[in-house]
Amino acid sequence: MDVIRRLVAHLDVSTDFEHLVYREAELDALWSLTSFQLLNEDDVEKRKAVERLHLCVHRAHDLVATGQPKAAAEILRPFC
Image 1: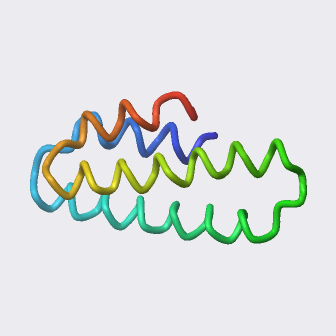
Image 2: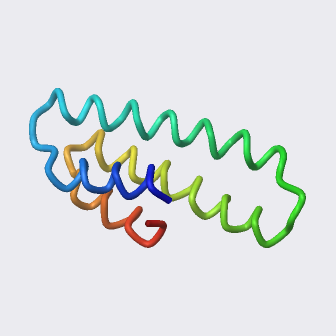
């Protein structure tokens, strides 16, 4: 997914507080999108994949909040 690939690229180079705030906002948006998709996905396998992404986005957000953007990028990299 191109959105996730770009977010991971940004996480890899984010060091300033301002950058981390932007990354948290982007992760919030992605978390909301995956929430909506979970509500509307009927296919069991696709739903499981979205659920894994949703949980990883939440974990990545928590890592960014504690100043660990590279760790957050690693969590999301498998979804690129």
